[in-house]
Image 1 (cartoon, rainbow, N blue to C red):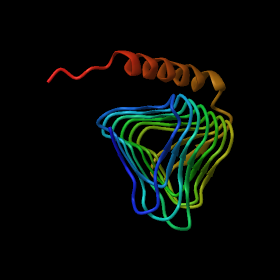
Image 2 (cartoon, rainbow, N blue to C red):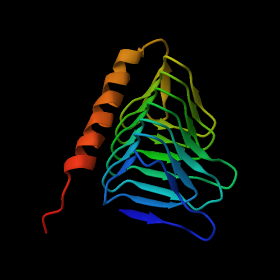
Image 3 (cartoon, rainbow, N blue to C red):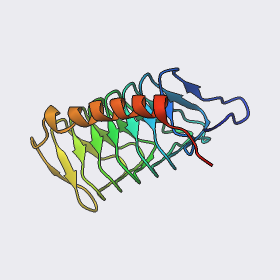
Image 4 (cartoon, rainbow, N blue to C red):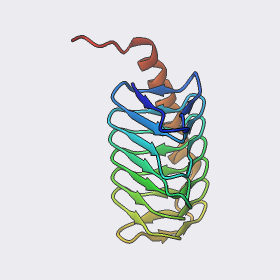
Length: 173
């Protein structure tokens, strides 16, 4: 796996986290217990702010997480960050899902038990309230549409998948 220090910034990775060998983690990044970082994901903590990934959270294939000196990127516990997602200087609270191809920008907040739909763009300073679904470009809110059973089974599936990969993944070339 590609884990790099940058100057005085060195990633902190919990021993039970799974980082795929083709993922990249650079600099000021913290990754929690049973979290998983999948192929081609890039977590680049070089802007001065911290990138935090909570316990049991998955950052899926091709996603890019970055930060700014003013705005850390914080992803809580039990979250799903789908494939090809871009998070930059935002907060995703616990038990939230950001769908494939979505973009969440500076100072946006995705509250607990909310969902950003695939390919949605959550612009600077927008808040997606608990239980809301954010869809479209720019994202529009549909309130009271998300329940925990829409998110938590996926979280558990990725925790189990990471355990499988940690114990059985092997390179053949």
